[in-house]
Length: 355
Image 1 (cartoon, rainbow, N blue to C red):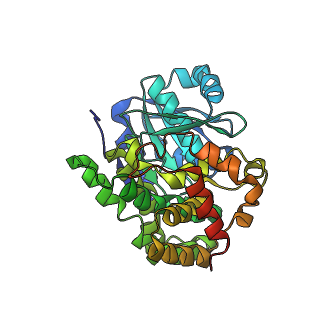
Image 2: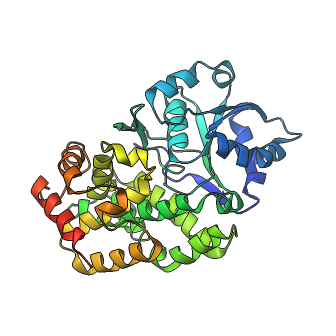
């Protein structure tokens, strides 16, 4: 049984002011692990938050660039991390997932400080691990998400807007994946809550997404930006925590996993949510949801998310490898019908000529 489904959170330019009050019940030493640029962006506010308090930061440690077992084992051996009572995860999804698995494996609490809004990693208990070459390794499951999420909208507004752009794509998948994966199921109370919360991961993104991106590009915290940050991090994360892995994932993320074996994905720096947004279109085409496909295709085109293979520096020559990897995992093992390679290929071919 999950012991904590709903992490608490604060949002706004002053959210770090709550750090001491929120974290001190769990100890007096915190190690900070994250991306180097992310820690640099957050450090001044973090230092100010703990100044003059009993809560001490034992050090700032780069996570290593990949959410891998190798980096987790390296971090475990660092004395200042070993002696910490809690861990602060600062950065994006891979930095946070690294801390998440490290904290869970060493029986410690962790707190998340997202400096970009590209995934719901800050809120979920699920960690995604990769091989050092960037290809998917496995999912790490736990019952414990972060104790609290500190969402500083000012820091995120000053981060590269491409991460928010990709976060919108990743988050919108939650609605389409849960609604299809749960189709025909007799859902428990928490599962039904998760599916219904996931319904918030569609309309609000289409409504506020373009304006939030514009504000992020202008480095301006705004109500629209907050709506999208809450959608990316909280709505999507809570849906994931409430439903099991078979419902929280689906064909859109399977397509992302498929693209991890294509060298140009890493070479051109295509982001997780960017590829997932294309996976949504594949899902909708496979599921024959043509009205929704038209709506999301139009939205993707409006904000520049991919709608064709060429937008991902790929071609039909890569599709068989993508499909083989996509369907080899667990993402569509629980589905209202069997997803075949031919169905995915036909959907991709359909999208290539879709206007």
